[in-house]
Image (cartoon, rainbow, N blue to C red; front, top):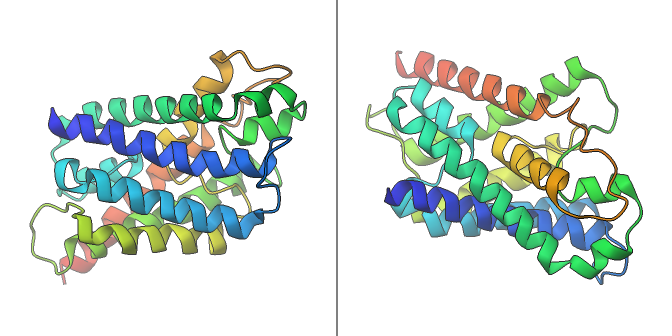
Length: 242
């Protein structure tokens, strides 16, 4: 149960800090409107660092259903724990998103740009093309999970992969460079909980002029990361077999 609790806490912290910087950038009447993409990429990396550091020793700091599934597919995590981890990751993402809304409540009230409002919750593509958006999310998540195998696993020891507190910084740096290098086409969800949980909150929170939650796109940041994670596990196991 401790692992589930810290997956919830860690994912909530991740979304509070990560989506918080997006809100600071795009909402009306904030003091962070000049942050830009550099600010978003660095802040998300730092958010991952903090969230991983908090939760690593208790849960392994997956904070991402794709990471959980990828580790399980590689035999580095018990499949029986996967549903509970994913449930608490999504619940944590919803909670983090709620905290962002509470923090910026007056800015949400004064913002009428529906695209900007949705951006503080979930991702959307710069050019909408389901196939290529899927490719982008698959590649980005592949890079994340493949990197996590080596950061957290070290040598090919056959032991379970688990992030410790000392791995928080390299994972944060990995997410930062993914944002810089691969994030432009889709906003780099690379995490089904990061997109789905906040998108649910966008749908249910009383936000003025919020528009629709773009559910027609929502399956891409869920399926793409899962495919990327499974591919990362397969490649890792192939290398491990040599």
